[in-house]
Each structure stands twice: as C-alpha cells, then as structure tokens.
Amino acid sequence: MAVAEEGSFTRAATRLHLVQQALSQQIADLERELGVRLFERSARGTRLTPAGVVFVEEARAMLAHVERTIGRVRSGAAAAHPALRVAAGRSFHSVHQIVADTIGQYHAVEPAVEVDLVELPTPAQAEALLKGHVDVAFAHSLPETAEVAGELVWQEPWNAVLLPAHHRLARQQPLWLRDLAELPMLALPGELDPALTERVVAALADRGLTPTIAPVHLAGFAELAVKWVADGLGWCLMVPSARDEFRGASGVVFRCFADEPFSRLGLWMLWRRDDPSLLVQRFLAAARAVRQVRDAESRLVSPGGDVEAAVRDPRLSR
Image (cartoon, one colour):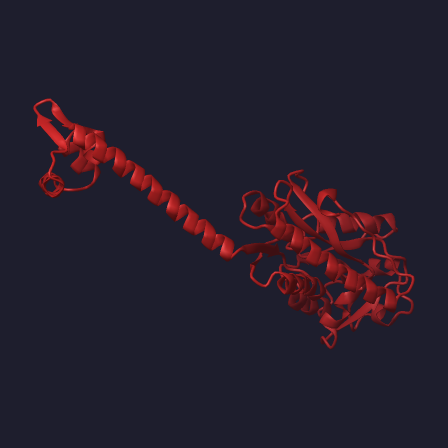
C-alpha cells in the first residue's frame, strides 16, 4: 500500500524505514504467490496494474475491518471492566471516613466497577474533572466554573477548637469565641481550600472576633496541629467530629464553644455537568445513602439537630 500511495519504491522504502532492495523483494515474492503483476515500473514512476488496484482496495477494506474489530474488542473489555475515578483531598479523619463509606456503599451496589481513589487538593479537582482525569471528586467548596456540578453530602459546624493544655483557656468554663483573641489562630491547611481561612476569618469577624494569624501555617494537618498548638503557637479551629482524632494527644485539649455555630465546613461531591453517566449517578446515590445514615445517627444523638441541604445541579437529585 505504501508503494501504491507513494508511486515510488524509493519513497515507499524511506517511509517504511526499509532498504529499497528488501521492499522490492517483498513485492516480488507477493506477485509470485498471487500469480499476477501488481505494479508497472517505468522511468516515470510506479503505478498499479488493474490487478494491483483490486488488491489494494481489498487490502484497505481488510485493514479497516481489523481496526474496527480491535476497537470493538477494546470497547467490550472496557465495558466488561468499568472503572470510576474518584478524587479527594486531605482533611479530617471524619471526612475521610465519609469518602470510604461512600466507596464501600457503591461497591456493594456495583461490585464489578473498579474504583480508583487519588488524592487531589480542592484547587486541582475542578481542572482534573474538566480534563476527564477523574469522574467525581470530594471537595470542601464548589468551584466557580459552571461546567462542574455539585451536591452537598456532609457538613458540620466550626464550633470546636484545639488549645494548648498549659493555657488558661484550656480550663475556662464556658469557652466563648471572643476569648480566643488572646492567642493567634493557626491557619487551616491549604489542602482543604486556599480560600477557606479567608472565609472562616470573615465569619469570625462577624461574631466580633478578629484573630491574629499565627506566623506559621499548617502544611499537613493532625501531626503539625498537635505539635504547634502544644508549643503554644496558637489555637486551631475544629469540627466536633474531630474530637476522637485528637483524643489522648499530648499537650493539647479539645474544646467546644458556648457560642452558636458561626460557620460550617461542607463536603461536596463534584462531577462534570455534561457527564450524567450511570456510574456517576449511582455513586451519587451511594453518597446520599451514606448521608441519610449519618443524618439518622446525628438525630439520635441530637434530636433537634438539622443538616442543611444544598444541591447545585437538580438533574441528578431525583
């Protein structure tokens, strides 16, 4: 086919990275086997004989069929082994548990689907979704782009704090937000959301607390939080479910505020708006099932409790 397309044994050999003599020998062997001449050679070039035209047409049809067959085989293999790619960022252990529970619930319904979980910070998740690198993501905020849809699957109030055990606030009863002005605030980890600290500080200011931000910022979470708080560098904002994460940690105490919650930490499940696939819909259903169980458990603990709902895209909320 290369000889037919190039009209020259020399150019065809160059294109195929062959020595011209080897290519000529292959064509000669093929003509001998078929019992017909495929090419006419002249000083003006090489062209197909009538038999050669038929051979090339059939060869092209055969190659096209082979390519279609390969494509169907690969598609069938993909359908036989579907996969869902999930992204989640670093956060509290209670948030990681929600992700794990959702994947477990999904696997119970779709045992044949492989789930690939990757760690991605919130800022990188929207881009990964839009580029098709992941199918769904768990983030602490909604991206600004309208191409990404999301639904709130969990939220908890910011009404707890990690304090140095040696500070008087660790023993004060009750503890109010305004009391925290005595100590700097350790900025929340950037892995949660770069704008999270800014939003939290603004919400605190609305309650009359304008904290001084400590000169060190959390690059990780639990380990550094415990170390720096214990050293007296400042206090770190918490959600109540993080209590067990720091239970028994040396040099720190976990306390809740007497104030009403001033803000909430949310967890959103995100997906591409143009990809309402069955895999994504069923994963969202699994996230909702996990949320319903947690809401029921929360009401048992706190009968008056209520979890605020929010849906960015109603199409998958039916």
